[in-house]
Image (cartoon, rainbow, N blue to C red; front, side, top):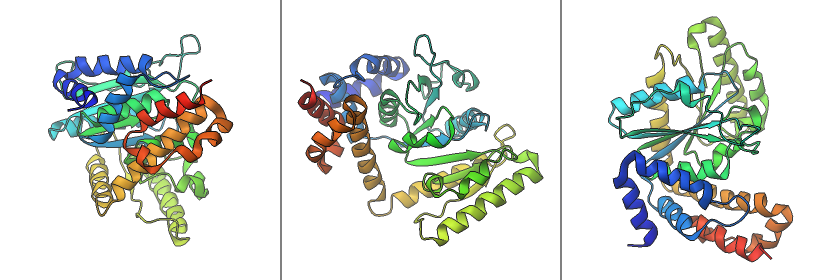
Length: 316
């Protein structure tokens, strides 16, 4: 057993305290200005190689109800006996740079429940919504729990970073907000695997929003832009209406991904995109261009070791 695999085994056996320590250690071990240290890279690559579950990404504008939906999903999955990890990506403090903890306070868990873990992480300066630490934390949680939910900070169209880690991306739309009109833009239509119309108890406004989204999806599908038929689910997280429909849609998408090598290819593309993004963040576009030909498909199996190797080459 490799050192990274042993650390992952110890992490799984250590419960919530061990995971909390590991996530805290990421702050120091995954240096945003340089390469990850050897121990951190080994642990994260072991986690990439041995996933225990699936990652569900929740994105959408502020006020759409992502935190309430996250709490509802967590409760349903725990009732079904699945371990659940949650990463709530919060806005960053302008003073300390840390998470403001707004979302975490709205997601309830029992401290005694070893199979439910919620962690707030700061978006930092990433307009895409996920810092390197958040992506690494999601990969670590994916190796521990059957379900990992990543709730983004909620800044609208720029949240494409969630695509670096989510197996199933759920985009939330609120009735009466005008969000559904944005679905006429093809760039947004390429992102979600499932679309949720929240606050379905709003009646006519919710039905109208769902019809608008379905119409936009129909236009996009007719242009040949979709392999997977994106379902539109109307739900009310506060009342529980439609939650089972969303879980069913997530399960259907996972089953679709597991046909052939779709899931493996998706995760490989994510790992390589994350690697390129890390290089760009640390060394700019010029640095990425210098090293681009040295990034190979095989690096997807151990992206953090590859990051260490490439950053070392770029560092004077």
